[in-house]
Amino acid sequence: MPLVQVQVIKDVFNEGHKREIIEKITDVMVSIEGKALRSVTWVNIVEIDSGSWGIGGEALTTEAVRTMQGAG
Image (cartoon, rainbow, N blue to C red):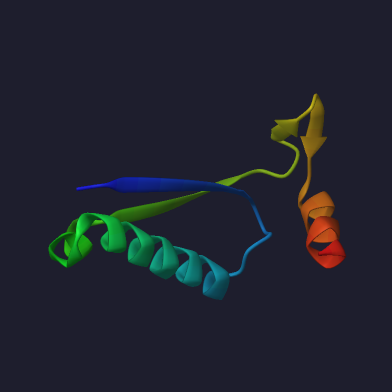
């Protein structure tokens, strides 16, 4: 029974994005562990408040992530 936890900055991904993350991560895990474990493969999305996640000594905000998404 694998549990995969995905941490994201709050308000970056909408409900549709989160469903897609759950579906695709489950598919990857099942491709590794076998189809019989699909029903017991858990994916948990944890949203971290904007500014409560630091990278390189700087707080990362929702706005900064959205800027990065637009640059890609």
